[in-house]
Length: 505
Image 1 (cartoon, one colour):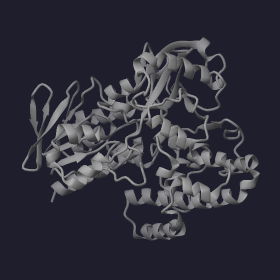
Image 2 (image 1 turned 120 degrees about the vertical axis):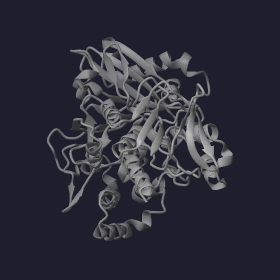
Image 3 (image 1 turned 45 degrees about the vertical axis):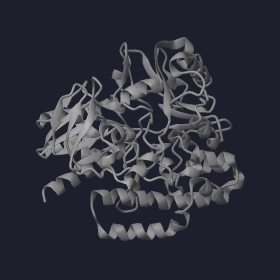
Image 4 (image 1 turned 90 degrees about the vertical axis):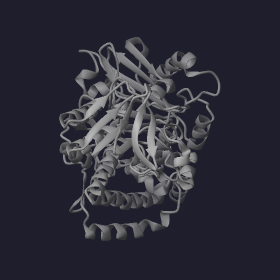
């Protein structure tokens, strides 16, 4: 059985490794000169930076992704991590001495003493939802009937919230808009308004272990909460390992090769065509990347049914990012308490998202994050130096001006804002690499950057892996899996099992 995989990002390499281990003849085509996609590192003069702050779930020892990657013969090391949150009026940093799993609740009660009832309600809701997440993850690995019963019992306890959006959920718990923002500000990273996101997803974006790695993971007798890790040496280690697995099992990876067409015969995908006209026949075609790029360009819309086309035409991509990667001759962690901190400088998430969708860049005034990848990777900076990234969400296309002509000005502005938290930052810069929407369009082979995939809008359908074209499968951040490193590995793993089982019948 022969499979062609379009795109050597995380999703593509994961499914390629799965199929190659099972004896499939696998060929991966990648338009870049390197593999990894968003998992690859930006590099300049001895410095390396990940493509943003990748606190990963499931990569700890015996985590769900760790188990999958062990099966796929990928070796790596990870370290537990957490992050801080800074708002205009207050900060949320873990205490120096551990004060239990509910220290954030206690701290928020100090800041918002009139919100005790709402915080009690939220944390009861949080506990139920996290139990549900844990059960779902356990069921993904083993199909136990008693877990399904437990899942139903827990769902019934929060069913009344299931039809609410995140904005409505916050209104039902809290009165103070600043407290609401504590739990919804991260939605700006997804380029979405609280009114567009499901209420049941809010705890997943506010897992307490993300703010304190000391919080125990065990929940009850057999469930395990999420924890967060960095990959020592950077995320590139994962895709490098997957590539080796593909090659070690007889697969092929061709870089600098752009696929321009999926060949279809009587409703069945039968191969691909490259930019130079070369054709490659295959029994299975698996494509990652952009939905509209695949379904409007690589294949003709006439091969898709109306319902599927309606999903494609209705998608809402996320926006881009603006990253300023810096090399430093001073350790920024003498000022920032953790390798990662989010600086939220607005409480009006709706306005921030609306501005972004209209091409208006906040220039850092709405917020940004500061991330220090060299803290968990000696390879990320020369001896005695440090790598730092200032990152913020931004429009794919600017309403006024363009990224190429404005990037230096915008980078200087971000550095200036960051100096409030890392004094003298601009005086210690030894290297700089600015990355805009233009760079990420090229890296991801998208006409329009959608960093993180599609907005997980409460009223929009996700694009299924299985397409109306027989033997053509769609994977990656714009597919039904949604964005996120963990979800790419897990969904590609499950889809590979499904493909293998179908072909074994």
